[in-house]
Image 1 (cartoon, rainbow, N blue to C red):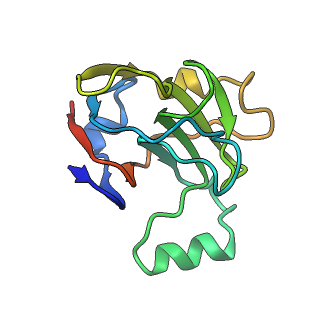
Image 2 (cartoon, rainbow, N blue to C red):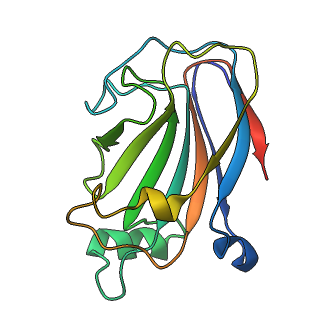
Length: 161
């Protein structure tokens, strides 16, 4: 997948067998990254790549907006973990998503990571959902969706494994 001067999305629901796997892994590469930005500031949160793991709202807690969004066939996460390439924060930093209070950004590769080479990643979303990070949120039952977000720069995305 490539994005050059725009935003591209790849959305794929995880299959039943995939939802039960504790680890997610992929490889990714950025050929031209945006400058470092503050990921916690709405509108100033540009990043090269992001992998989002969406969790459904807890049973009976979906808002009207979430129900309406699902009615039209779009995903409506109740909580989201976002693994990020980019931003001014150091690797391992956790930032509240400026667009979704019930979402966290986890920096895997900060701005300044070498460009033009592939990096392999492996994450454990359940461990990343540790109570020390998510004070007011409930632990989700399973992974709902993920998508790859590419913004404004020429980027080559890897395939999920």
